[in-house]
Image (tube, rainbow over the protein chains, first blue to last red):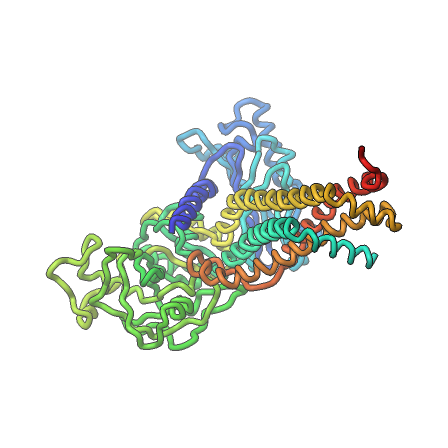
Length: 172
Length: 420
């Protein structure tokens, strides 16, 4: 019985550590990625504090900052630049939606001065049956990004992983 | 080669006591190593088999892993309850294919009691998308019907038609019983190897009914509602523990997760059970590595003992080896002789270790299953374990080189040279 108590304690302790993955958390250096596979469609939703991608979270003031925003936006919209799904699956990037206060300045940022970028990337795959992973290429272009917490939902099941510049491959 | 084998065996038999003790050490260390690996493997297997087909688990706001552990494995602490209204809203969401409410908290002789509705038996999946099957009987129909998991029926010896009494909370000494409202067993589920086997299933209405005349966690003194009258009351639950949700499209799971997180009625949390499990493994992986490292060190200690014993025996065997040399054994033969001895002990230790582990899993396995919910599959050896064994034998061979080499060096001159 005592062993069981220790086990509970350990699991509870561990679960508080593991719970830092929650939605809506804003931790600089960490981004969240949600991967959903349905039929031939691969949908990726990236949520990242802007600091990871730009180094600042306010509206761009100087020319240099404006250039950084443009650079980020064009980099994220480039095919192959961010995600490389299993090559054999022949996936093609069909749409990218980026949403952030720095991209649409008419929307005000949250009161606390922190701001995120939400991106939705949709791929269509010719051979979805062999699609079982992707390489995340974000770390090279965005050195402030240290870790990406990933949740995956496919028809086969669900999984989760932590990616970093040392571990860029996601398998499911 | 064959005569060397015989020589090695006979010589070893002469020193059976010391070598026997070494063999015990090697055997136990191998058992420990394989045991750690087996429990690690089976725990993962069992956990990931317990949820299948459920896209989301929704409950009151807590940590992801805690909600998943409590709702699926009844491990850990109870989370807050969520309102019944939230369940109804969730169920009506167009993206939701099915939603099964769960209410936990009571127990029956140590086994958790789960309040749910009949849809649980239709939608719950385990293993490779397998549905629950009935060994006997049928789902509960009346308020005081109960469906038992396979282990509950087995260990407590219940049959259809038996009467059981639920305990408030997790029971123990001084636990309050719902003795005035016994349940009738109407169904027994087929074994699944998941926490379902250890669960007593009743209807949500039953959970409400047995607590009708209770307040603040205890029966109201001098006030009791007889069993036959509970139907006159509104038995709709006010709150539940969690909801298992299946979606029409699996791709919608993240959208649904956000919908639940933003739900206005109360703070709720939606967890992808598979993802939460992976997160748990990420954290527990470190502990597993540590356990495996300790077990490996124990094997190293066992093999070091083997080397020490064989090395020490070289002294008492000076004459034996010298005589072998004098009758024509080459130094290489002596070398092989010593290696064969070490390898033989390691091999025998591995075989005995596997046998010991098989015996232990057969004896302790059922107890571990009921106590901790980890089903240890009875088997001789798995491919992963075979790889570990190969490593142990390799290490045994390598470490036998040490006494082998020493004997090879010494045997050239030693033993026959009289010492003055």
